[in-house]
Length: 214
Image (cartoon, rainbow, N blue to C red):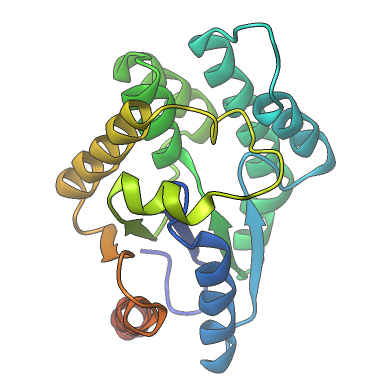
């Protein structure tokens, strides 16, 4: 625990079609309503260099990308993001709200691609040295619903072109993380209407705000 006036790190996770963009904006506005101005960022990305890596990771290409190579790129972007943006902001007492973080690596590259969890854990230790979010909200929904929601998007990225089986593995990976780290990771049913989803998100934020102020 970092003390009442210190910065906080909150992440939002979810598979395709879960509504991360909409709900990230909602979380930012909700925190602002509580008098907290949050720095909003994303992964991979968050700095000019990390955004270039994001483009490498997400762009469709004919060449197959090795799963470990993909994982190393993501952690390279994360190392830059942490040192240039996230950690300095928190050290200044600011709050950071991030679209995806290391849970996504365990879900997508680990459960989805098959990179051994032990290898990801080694990279996590090297890059993060024990640093983790204070709160993670995971937007969960069946894969079929999520993929139906994103149909018609212009030029799907390399991940959005994956098959149902891949996303089922990713979802399972996320749920396993939530089950293992239930104190940090809060699951919100994102298959419902937006009002109900945001009601649950606000309840989770309220609970954390109360806890962190005591």
